[in-house]
Image (cartoon, rainbow over all chains, first blue to last red):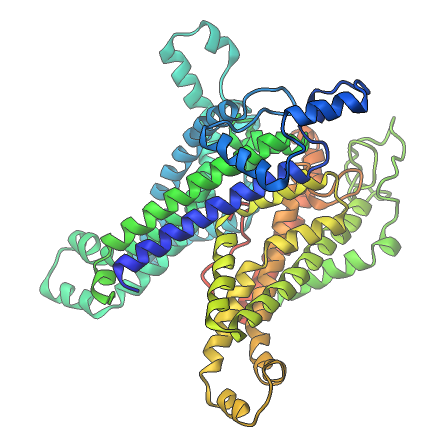
Length: 327
Length: 269
């Protein structure tokens, strides 16, 4: 499809996704047993008449569509409701958790890109080297593990086994209270290492596979032979001729991983006790804290959709081949 | 090959669990003396923190995990194939609507859909869990079926069938379906691996199969406090999960998935 149409379609799609999520979140609030009243009614507290009155006051007896409109209005103002468990504002809780998660997943993603690209390039460029094969086998094994297995493995080896790294959490309370900002920063970083490495290895495995395949395809191409015949130095060869065509493939894979940035590396966060979106979601689900889950759902999906949209449109502009072929 | 052998072993273990397991998987045998015992002649895989026989839990866990994985795969395949086939057979406007809906559903992170369902339903039996998993995972199958049928529709034999006056359902059943078996078989096996991994992940987090019913995932969760002291308690279910998921993926590759997404997916893809 032509450029303009494409952008329009993608925008429309993004809007549809966000709208669907909002409706689903609202339906969740509505459908889950125990509406908002259950949260602040004491055990066997009020009479049916009093409950009916409170319902009327909060607009809980309005038709579905009216309630939906109210809900959307509240969301528009940024009010995501209050948690069933501790009455905290959902928006505040989610935003705090989101920043903590982004710290973790951002670092993990950077590590994944670095590690994945390096190993992928190594495998594609020098595939017969023993190191390439060894790393390749190791990453395949990692790729096949469910996240929690990798997380537990790294936890036992790096934290329990050697004692170099803390066993979990985001910071040491003692340092947080008594330390200087620099010490606090270092401490958080110290706690960040093992979970970030877990994420980096897991994602890096996927990135490296794609990089390897893309590079292997390129290496056999005719233009590469031409470049070698012209006498281009190996380094320049790799950089300018080999890696360029694999850029879109790898960028696409990285784009695919964006959803995880916001969604939170749920399992890793739970295993390492990292207080981010993942832990928040799991605890809220276990406690059946519907507003929290719904609110998190809306925030995460919106973040994911918008970032995917941005990446997709940016990639489309960056890839010269697509611009040529588009009608 | 090795992968098929592994899967058969797991399958036999799962189906035969009630007869093969030496003990009741939820029976706490002798809390004073039998906690965290290393493997021995009486308990081939040892006992766990609640003095339950690990081998029995592993067998019944295989049963539960495989039941959830298989049922959810079946539901996903049936829903997906039906949707895809229908979308490929109706008027263009409906096609756009149906596949547009699939696109939207695909874009919502699956984990969020799952958690939403779990919150709504509360404690779920394995069967209900399987239904929920199946109903959130059918989009890839529907896209596969849709594209394949659209591609087949351009072929001469379909045109011939239409010329003969055969109705669309008959064409679908008699002429198109046989071509779908191979790709669907591969995609289905891959989906099985994927859903098994997801179920383990959810059970590990305490959101899937609930204790005391064993599932490989929640067995790992139970074993986390004892990583140093009784490492095998975590290692055994982990290895089993990896082996089963890995073999399913390997089988799928050989049947010829040809897709680039070959690994057991994470819970948030």
